[in-house]
Image 1 (spheres, rainbow, N blue to C red):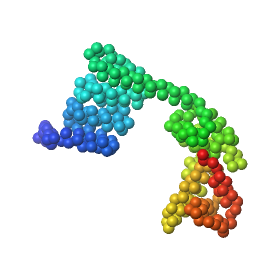
Image 2 (image 1 turned 45 degrees about the vertical axis):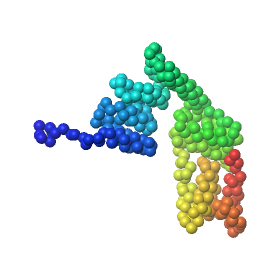
Image 3 (image 1 turned 90 degrees about the vertical axis):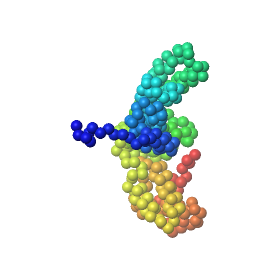
Image 4 (image 1 turned 30 degrees about the vertical axis):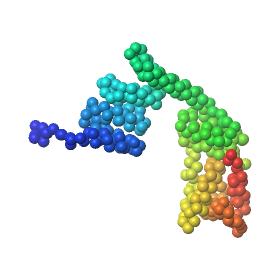
Length: 315
C-alpha cells in the first residue's frame, strides 16, 4: 500500500458542526436541496450524530422526499438516536404523505400499550392516529369522487373543479368530462380547460366541440396547446414589440390570451397576425380610456368578433 493510500483523511476540527449549522441555515431559508447536501456530508462524517440525522430527516421531508425521510427516522428510532418524540411525529407525518395509513396504526398502537407512557405522550400518539385516520378518509373520499365528474353550477367552482383534474388520472371519468364539453350550456372557458386536460393526458376519444356557432370534432391528443398556436404566438410577438408603451402592450397581451383561451380549439376568423395584433392594441387603448381607438379600423367583422368575446361573462 502506498503512503498516500495508507493515509487517513482527517476532517478539519469542527467541520461537521459547521456543516450542520450551515445546513440548518439553508433549511430555514427553504433552500432544501442545498441543506440536504450539507447535512448528508455531516452525517457521513458521523453516522450517530443525532443533530445531523434529525435535521437531514426534516430536510428530506421539506423537499418532498418522504421515503428517504421515513427510512432515516425509522433507522434513528431503532438505534435510539435523536429526540424520540420528535422522530416519531416526523416518521408518522412521512407515512401520511406516503399514504401508508395501515403502517401508522401498526407502528403507534404497540407504543400505546406501554403502560409507562406519560399521559401527554400517549395523548400525542393518539392524536397522530386520529390525524392519519382523517387523512385516510379524505383520500378515500377523493378516490371515490374522481370516479365520476359533474360540473357544479357556480362558474368559479367549475374553474376550481376543472383545475383539480390536472393532478388526477382522468381516464376513469373521461366520458363524463367529454359529456360536459359537448353540453351546449357549458361555459366556453370551462370547455377549454376540460379539453386541454384531455389533451395533456393523451385522450384519443373524439370530442364534438360547439362554440361561437361553429361545431368541430377533435381528437384531444392531436391538438396544440392553446398558447402554442401559430397565429397567437405571432400576434403576441408583435404586441410584445410595443416597447414605447409597456402598459399598453401588457393589457393587449392579457386580452389576447383571454380570448384565444375562450376560442380554443377554434381561433380568430382572420388569419392575419398583423391585423390581430393591431386590433388588440386598439382594444387595450380603450381599456386605458382612449376614445375612438377603432375610429379608422376597417375590419368591422373582426371587430364584432372581438366585441362578442368581450361580452362573455366570466363571473
